[in-house]
Image 1 (cartoon, rainbow, N blue to C red):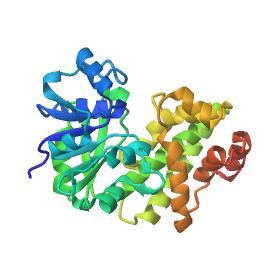
Image 2 (cartoon, helix red, strand yellow):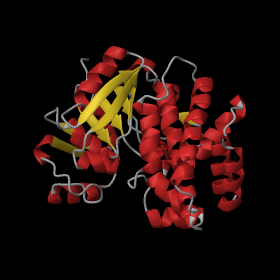
Image 3 (cartoon, helix red, strand yellow):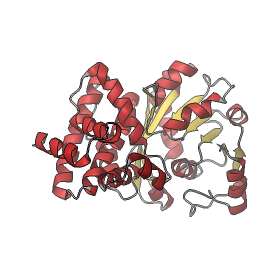
Length: 331
C-alpha cells in the first residue's frame, strides 16, 4: 500500500478536530470515527464539531462519519488515533478487525494507564502492529491555534523514515511546517512528561510564584526530561529541538494548556476531583504522572519535579509544602 491510502480519524475532541482540519488541507476525503451518534448528527446539521473548535467549518461532502469502529477501520488504510489516552483501551475493546496491516499514527500525547506503555508500544504488544508501521505526531501545536491557522510546527516520528516523510507531507501546509525523526519512543515519552511539567507550572502559578521562578522550573524540567528519555531510550537526540523543548514550553506557559490550567486550580486549593469536574476536559498529565512514576521504579532516574507533582496529586501533600521543598533543590 502506498501511504496514506484512505485516512481515518479516530476521536471527536479538539485535537482530533484540528488533525481532521489539517489532513483535509491535502486530501479530498477522510473517514471519521466518533463513538456517539448524536454528536455525528449534530455535526452534520451544523457543519462543524458541536462541542470542540466550533469555529472550524467542514465540507461534509469530504467526510464519511462512522460510529462503528470496525466499519471505520475496515474502510481505511491509515489510522490516526486522536483520543485521550485513558479512553484508548475502551475504544479498542470494541475492535474486532485486525490492524497489523494498517498504518497507525498516534497523535495521543499520553500513556496507556495501568499498562504503563507509550502508545506505540501498546499497539506493538497487543495488536501486533510492526514498529515500522507506527508513527507518532508531536510538537508545540495547540488545537486552538490550528483552528486560527496560526503558524505551527509538528514532527512525525517513525522507524521507517520514508513513511515518516509520507505522513509529514499529508499534514504539512501553509500554516503547519513539519520535520521527521526516528525517535518514536523519545518523542512519546517527552509528550507525556511535558504535560506533567505543565501541571507543575500551573501549580506554581496558582501559588503565586512569578515568571522568574517559572523560568527556573522549566530549565530544571528540560534537564529532568533529558535524563529520563536518555535512560529509557538512549539514542542520539537534541532535546532542545522544538518537538521536545518547544512542546514543553508551550504546554507549560500557554493559556490554551489544559494541564497548566488543571495545575493552577490545584495550586489555588481545588481538590483533584473538583478540578477535573470543573474543567470538563482531560488533563493527560494527571494520568501520565502516575504512569511515569511507576515506570521510573525500574530506572531510578532523579526526577524531583515528577515526584513533587505525584505527591501533590496522589499523596495529597500540600502544594505549598511540596513546592517549597522543590524550590530548595533548584539552582
